[in-house]
Length: 95
Image 1 (cartoon, rainbow, N blue to C red):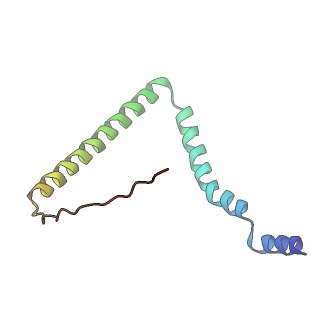
Image 2: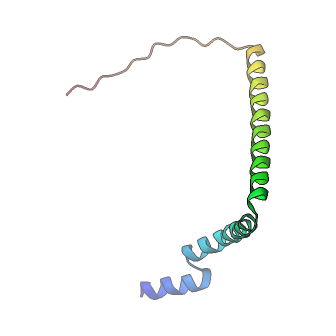
Image 3: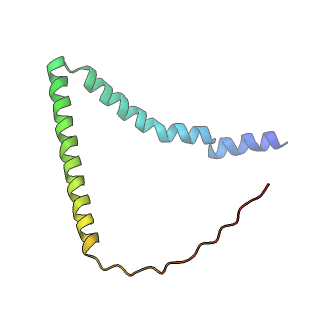
């Protein structure tokens, strides 16, 4: 009885695996498109694409480092309220 109910619900709403496949199919399609583009490149074009990717990555890292440095400088100039020192008691387990 429960098996029939589960099958009916799955047919109406779809199973978890069906939903997962539907969600991932667009990712697989995009991956396959990119694979076709890359495999069609000759060695020189692939080298150029790699160099462009490395430059893009270096630029992004540089920009990120600049933002981090700005935030660190901002943090140093911000007034901090002193925290009260509190004694922390811990219990040791024996045995």
